[in-house]
Every structure is written in structure tokens, then in C-alpha cells.
Length: 557
Image (cartoon, rainbow, N blue to C red; front, side, top):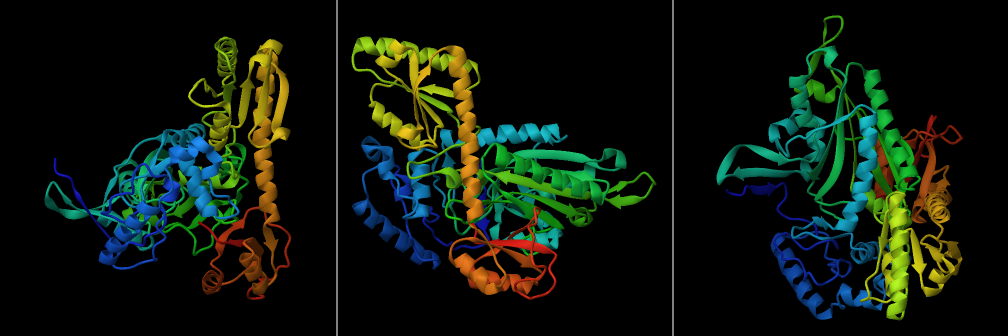
């Protein structure tokens, strides 16, 4: 079978620290992801790009530090750049050392490794249940979309055109119509809704799909912004504007609750400005998260599409009065970007720090012995503890390998962000106790000695500590967020806050041009008009006009 050819909107790309150029082989697979950094110029011709990447590659092969395996032997944290020194490099180091992802062979793509994918599965599991509870059904739409569909909604094609991947050849022949590799599915969904919806009795129609999407990003960052990523996208059709608005707000609340309760990320929920609204939507609602470097991450969105797409695709229904009406619609999505958000919100210089509800492994058991006799008794006790906790639904793993020292194992599982560690040695077995360490409380203060192995006591203790870790991570992130939001009363104060790396919050009644000016001069955008509005002066800090709402500005990913 012939393989189709992709022709992309731009033949040249901007190279970043994430991946090598199109057409270039990736760097040696034995080299860690966090050392494969190009730091090339922002943009240049394709030929020059290839030559410069090749030169950079040759130099790097000579200067490269030992592979990740050697760094692991010395201790996991040794290979991690301190967050305060270089946040971006720290992030890449953690992804590599914690075995979350690696580069794909195509620029901007990534291979999500089992541990990273397990975090995504935990996100999927929670959200999928919530979607079904609220009356949505899963289905699947094709990955290839006729280019004419994208062109039907003017603002939609304008917003997505620079990011499209377009198929022009299939089976060795020029296609009669170009096909877009799914960047999002509003257009193809509407095409099918037109065939399925005829009467008010067919509404509401509420569906969701778990799929991959492709957006030809120029600046990429693992999990946060990649050429291809995984997400869920929900689509609904309604008989009235009020129902569509209620749906959009309901789903952003689902996302908010997930962020707080599962990911331990204290997001700010609000409405996007007109300039930041999704292409083709009437209103966009968002959850905005503050990362460890104080940049904002748009972690999930819900869009009230109004009748924009239904009018473009002529998606109508016969209402209860016998009149033809266009349906009202919503769409909403969360992606693997949330995995990046968890890393950047909670991680520290030792690596990942995972909230227990999302952790693939909630408890790691490290047996400690010196002699064969001690090994037998310690392993027997460790297996019993593992079995006990697993029966209670605690995601538990026993690291019984004898190729690594207990100290190496401590570092390794700390790097992977496991919330609790149980240590069992000969003396613990003799006393029928264990030692428990918390990942979120470093050093001796996080260690608890003499914890009884009695099944009922141990089960209760571990469950309570997991909840304490979950709550503590949220409280730490909340305190960090609130201490880095600054109220401003003038443009100068906003510039000072942004320069200091903080979020700026102030009353806003500026125009699109005013918003653009702020972005051009500070690099900050309106992240949202938060639902929870603090008291304010009632005067726009930019124009002095009457202002009804406060807006939050920040630099973002």
C-alpha cells in the first residue's frame, strides 16, 4: 500500500531546544533527552537549517556527557538541573530521568513512555467517568478532514491555517481534494450532525472522543506543545442558546474540579478575552494554572460555539413549533498538556512529585537486607505488605531487585514522584513495623518510624497519609499561586509585575488594540476574566474608562 505524502503550510520551520529538524536523524538514542538541546537561531532557510543542525550535531557528539544510565548509577538527582537555575532544562531533565517520554523521529513529536502514559490514563479514567455521568457518549471521527470543511467557517480557517498538516497525495496519485490531518473536529462533527439531527427530539446530542490531533507548531515543548498530542474533545448540539451556555459552563466546572481534586492544581477559572477566544466560538471558558516558573498554562477549555458552525454547515432541526432552526453548539477539551502541568506545578530538584490520585505507583516498598537469611524474612514481610495494600486498592509496587542498592532505589523512586515509600529491614520485621517516608516532605522530617504492620492499622495509616500528601500539594500550589498574583492600578504597575515574573490582576475595559499593546510591550496576554471577581476600583487601569470586570494578565506557555 502506498503511503500518502504530507505537504505542510510552510517548508521551513523554527528550530528549538526540543527536537532536530525535519529530515535529520535524531541524536543518538543512548543520549538523554535533557542533553539533546540545539539552541539554534529562531528561523532560517531550510538548507542553512540542515547544515547548522548537522554542525551542531557533530559538535554535540564530541562534547556530550555520559548517557542517562551512567547518571542513574551516581544518583538520579545528579542529572537534574536545579529548577532555580534553568527551569526549562530542569523540566526536560525530569521528563528524561523519570522516563516519561522521549523524542519521536519527526521534529516536534514525542514517544510517551509507559510511566508517562499511565499518568495520562489516570486523567482519562477520571474524566471519562465524569463525561458519562453527565450524559455524554464516546465515539470516533476520522482523522482526515476535507479541506473544504475547514474553509466553511471563516474565523476557524483563519485561526488554524498556519498550523495545518495537509495531505495532497494518496496511493501515489494527486488527490482531487486536499485532506487536513485533524487539528480539531468541529467541522467534521458538524458535517455528521447535519445527517443525524432533524428534529428537536434528536437534541441534545452529546458526544466525546479520545483521539490524537496534529498542529504544526513552530516552538515545541514535550507534553506542553507538540506537533501531535492526545486529547479528548467533546461536542454537543442543543435546541437553545441557554442550553448550550449551561453545557459549556458545566464542562469547565468538570475540568476545574479535576484540576483541584485530582491534579492538586489550583487553577483560575474564567472567560477568555475576545482576542483569545477559540476560532469560531462565541465565548471560551478556561482553567489557567500557574506553573513553577510562574508562567500560565491554559490547562483546559470549554467553548460556546453559538450557531457559527451550524450556519456554516446548515445544521438545522425542526423545533416543537414546526419551525426550522439552527442548532446551538459547544466543544471542550483537555489534553496531554495536563501531564506537563502536573510536572511543572509540583516537581522539585529531586524530580517528579505526583499527587497520589494521579500517581501510577502510590506506594513503593523497598526491602533492605544484608544476608541471605535476612533477605528471605524481609522479602516475605514485604510481599505481605504489598498484597495487603493492593487488596485495598492502593497502587503498590515492590522493588525486590538485588542489582541496585537501597539508596539508589530511594533516589530512583523519588525521581519518579511516588508519594509514599515503605522501608522494611530485619529490625522492622522483628518489631512488626515499617518505616514510611513522604515524597512531599524531604529529609528526616518526612520519615515516620515504627508504623505497625497490623493490617488494619497499616491500611488506615497509608490511606490517611496519601490523602495528606494530596492535600498538602494543593495547599503548597495554592499558596504559591496567590503569593504571585499582584493587583495593579496602572499600566506601569502591570509592566513591573510582569517583569518580576508575576501575574497581574486589574480592572479592564480596554480595546483589542490596548490588549495587543500590552502583549507587544510585555509579552503578557489576558489569561481570563476570572469567575471569582475580587473587589476593584471600577476604573480600567489602562484607559481610565469604567470597568465592570477584573482581568488577569500573564506570560504563558
